[in-house]
Length: 541
Image (cartoon, helix red, strand yellow):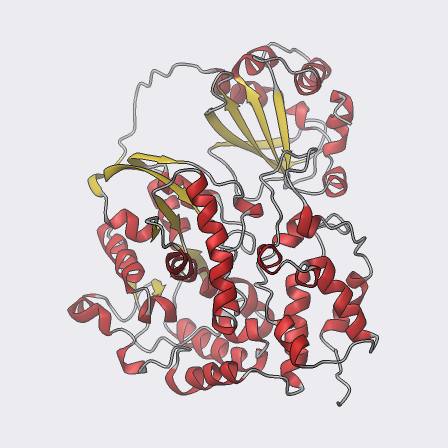
């Protein structure tokens, strides 16, 4: 067999030797130091069982391929495409800042395989469908927007905002596109759709066909630039990630327009609006974080903010959530290459939803919806957030009038917010851009009573900070404080007194007065960002 040149993989060669073989990418559970919602991160290895399928095993195999101890054959080709490239392994890896990027290394391997003729027939079929029919499903391109019917005539051909529907919602999950269009219209946002929309090329990138994906990118970006589009909205995280991360890389330039997922757009729009959603029935719902929306683009809070606006439902989180959420199994080309594997992975995720007694599993991705729905043969309802909102009643759509007098009960959480605003020296030593969430909780129920986050805008002895309500996406740490502990913290006069009290509540918690700290980055990275100064002062390390 001809020798394979791994020119793309070799760009990552140094990272292959940084792996300490600790196994956290596969075996980690509820890391004690961070209390993370973490359980056996590799969703594929959880199904297939063998170490070859987790990040540690993949890096070992890659090293053997590069050193010619292994040769590429059909088994290696199959193995290369079993990775969903979800990125969960990267979240647990402490070998290097940000974790070893195994998903990017696997995609680099696929590019090397494709460039040297190692290809799946089914991939070639999808490639031809995209070239000839502008979609991977082999559907007639003239029927792409037919599901809109007469509604299409009510949507302008040009506007500052474009809703990019995507192939999956055009041909397989039309209900998601219809829901998105309904809300954009209901909120009186003028938007256009591309009459000649084509595949974004996401699946081509995941397979390793970079040149063909670049052709799609050039075609679409040129069209959008000619239309002077300012914002492109997506309901497909695969399309969104492709535009936001891949296009600037493969085109080597800025796109010239903003990109947003629908949940981000709606969350921002709803912030200053008095809009009430009411569900038809009392339901327990849970939310599945799509990998491309969550780990790849750091969008975690926007969908949850929207769900929490719906009356008469209760959101209960699954065992693994946000950056540690298990993959649904459909990503990275796995659904089209190994559909049975994708379904087995999805069934594990369905089990997680059933464990919290959810009757509805929500997500924000057409791929996740399709795969999870196919795996849910037990009565669990699987919906996209957009279509779930369509089923609710919107009682009021008015802007909140400015209030001249506002009487607010000062809660312990609000007092802590005011205290931190007045004692900015507490954040001395932190690097600009540091961002962390606070959750002030009821000591009896552990339920959050108030959430806010702090961002460092300027460093120094008296740094400049910004405190905002809600939770931030992709924080460095989350600090959980009981209300009685918060009441005592705000009585501290000096930073040293505050740090001592903080450390006591963390190291010697009582039933009523306690502090928990959840780390979202490696300890090494947090030290570099300046968190070590306060941690040492408080006796946390």
